[in-house]
Image (tube, rainbow, N blue to C red; front, top):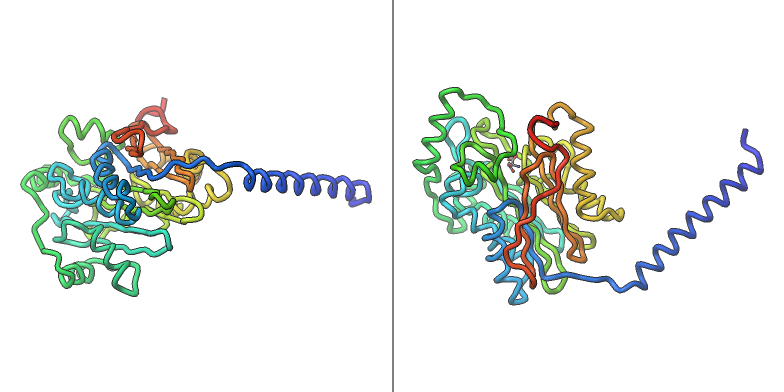
Length: 341
Ligand code: ASP
């Protein structure tokens, strides 16, 4: 029964919650905010070289959006990288189809999905953002736009990728390989799946992000993952921070992963804890699937604090700031190994 005593108790509790939130507010206004920028972070070991390119822009006081575009063009151009850009593994019909998106400090964004024959989808996404009234172009339309903008159409399927695809066709079993990516890369990659997601905070403290991939190797023709989807593979809110993802895109899309991470940071989560919560959301919704796949999130907040979290062991991310140019950090993770012991 609702009586006066209970009401008074409740009112006291509400008042003390209000007092706490006032003191938190007061503290956040008074306390000096330690900041660390410029800084750029990105997914996986190939992020180290990409960050260095982005750093050239940041060091000169350039905009974060220019830095992330320049940075992710490095793995896009890398002929040994079979998961991003040129030389990416094809879909199951032999087409190399690329996905990318970019987002700046004003909330502008551009994206291309399932684009063929264009080696730098991130720069096409940038032009979608800068020169069209749209956010996303796909397939033939994206390719046509790129060519109109002066991009060169080229064959992206390399001999090595064709060989891997022919090998895959022998069984044609579509099952994304668990996260053993770093090992695979050093020991001669088979069919892994890794995206570069990059987040930068420039000298003015503005945040931007970019994300680019060839997606899951040997995917169905027309399949689009999380990477070019704003909110899933990438999200930036200049008031709060930015987040990006890598891994099996379907599970990231289902949870609007990067948006979720940014919103959790808005509520006060640290970048790492926000990523961890997003990973746990995937586990909670699809526990059986979660054990079999890899998903990793990477995030940065307005102060330049960063963190990451993944489903499985093996995820890593690269960090570059004034103090360290080529740091590679092992991501924290939920499952110890593929057998979940
Ligand atoms: N997220 C990418 C996709 O689903 C692949 C990856 O990052 O490994 O297309």
